[in-house]
Length: 334
Image 1 (cartoon, one colour):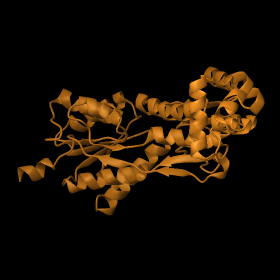
Image 2 (cartoon, one colour):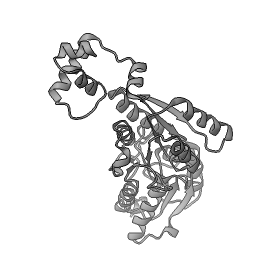
Image 3 (cartoon, one colour):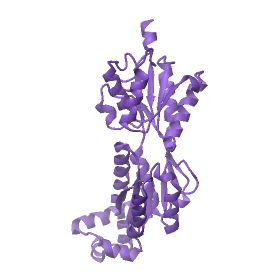
Image 4 (cartoon, one colour):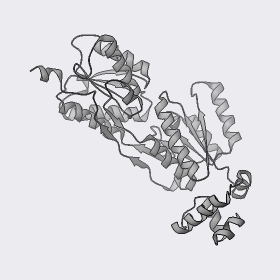
């Protein structure tokens, strides 16, 4: 670092602040130091850096979620933010219902000496998990928490608004016979999506009791089973909203199995805009959720040490209109 400071013509303290991603350094100075670092091939010594700063420079991401896309996006966003600031991201899966794995999780916390942790649903709503972090004094940022929302800092997306957009989209296409495949009831996003969807339909004269609802768990299989149940009878509904894309893909598979065309005979819409949304045919109309941006924001809050002082961050969502929704078939016939 002394070599970098001398070559760049700045102080050792300035080099340290640039390398650690600290604020209040002029952009031109940051660029000059970074160029010098590249030219000299300087690589910080992780052990020495950790000792000097009394930090591990490690952020943990803890999850238990059946959606591969959600977890991959969470990891990608947090990892990009960590790399940009010289931190490492540690990925850990937590099995809430397995006592042996929970004990392993506790051992991991004692071993890693994390500077902070990102908790995604449903892990972020486990009182036992939250107690462990609190007992060890590890800063936490939660993604879309449901239980005790004020206990730790949080980052949210507007899931309810996205579900309201879905309801208006289907209503504008003339659909009134509508079904909903719900996500896990202990998952904050699933609750918000259900409330937003049914609430918006109710405001347009379709009571929740008139919406055929089947419980799912965010997995492809639960979507397939729901699709068979909904479409394996006549008359079947004209539109289905599944609370995530994996379940929507399962419904699409069930429709194909039953010989029902999408969107000619039933409109289908998902949530997340995951890769599967463009891999099925027809491509899914869905709600784009900025999962990577949310996890990156959580990581930056932890690395800046400002998580506790910042208000919750909320991210907008948007409807992506593709090929899986169309006019109500009854309107088309008339």
